[in-house]
Length: 251
Image 1 (spheres, rainbow, N blue to C red):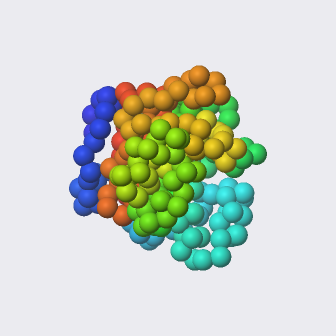
Image 2 (image 1 turned 90 degrees about the vertical axis):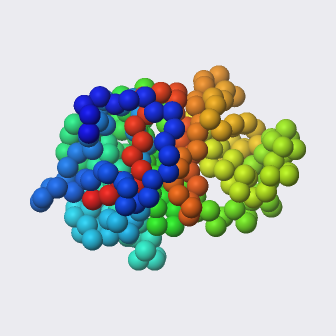
């Protein structure tokens, strides 16, 4: 891995077999090379790749994270959340140059992850056996991941998702296009920390371009991520440059 991080505008989809990153090393956890040099990091992983390390992953969680895991009814959901939280700490540890247990990862009143006392912003998403995480030291960041199977639900939500202009454009594009628009808007709302308090139909979010946030006039760049056939994901970040993509991060 080179010591400097190139500017990345887009990356081609990678299979799990091609993904080069490794985080587990001997009896401990290795850091993610290049994380401290990047303005923004975005990674995604398959929970199944991490399942053998679940017990070690649990040891990284704080009391609040463990309590949220225990509230999950299904074992598969508990496993996914455990691995999501552990991987989140591992990424931030790499960004901050700290041990995972020492990362000051908290949640605000809306449940959005925060890293107080640092310059880093972060976002986490998980769905149906996959996890996506983003971190940025140059401004707010948001990431959203959904299973592609949700596309069938999108037409009935079109008026909630789309602005009037988008509704006219997307009417002929089908549910896959609506799902992609959904994840882009979710990523933007996460970056802004607005959550469910803002209607999706009130913002327009093109792919691969910046959009103006109506409440404060800031711009964020929004792009789809190549997460494979089973999922759809998008990243909202301060800009298109200096992004470190890590496809299918594995132990």
